[in-house]
Image 1: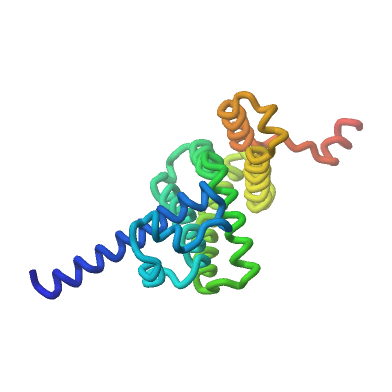
Image 2 (image 1 turned 90 degrees about the horizontal axis):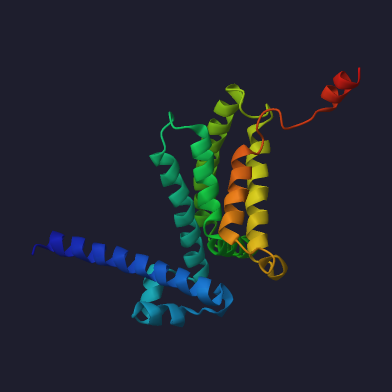
Length: 219
């Protein structure tokens, strides 16, 4: 094996171990909550020494941000797999499915981002996270603008639709974690499918009653 081959193999092993650290860290965060998980616990689950973790990540906050970046990258890949000719409703449904199919992970990343912002942790990585999210939002804006032009959605700024979608997803996640509503939602899968259907139809043309329309009707 040449020196180049050896270096290439080491780099591959390094990347594989890094992915394993992130995978195990996420599993622990979801199982026990991030505040109860230590670097030692992550290292033990991976089967490596604590010091090896720090060869990859300088802190737990960096692990948090790398996990969030990968989450947003997943959505970016999803948009990349969809074609501009695909039915716009299908694209919208895929977006809601992505955000709502794992409410525990969604809630975890929401908490982690708040922690990292409060501590001003790793500004460069935070900027990278927001850049990926901006790219996703631009793709959503293009989809929404196309549906507005087709006359399918209300003719309002694209961010109206995006923020309404975010509010629905955020509310759905809050319901998922509410002890009160957990006891009253017997068929959770059907309920979340119902919410997804609402999300896809939300903002459809003709659903909003405007003051001018009322004035016309009354005259």
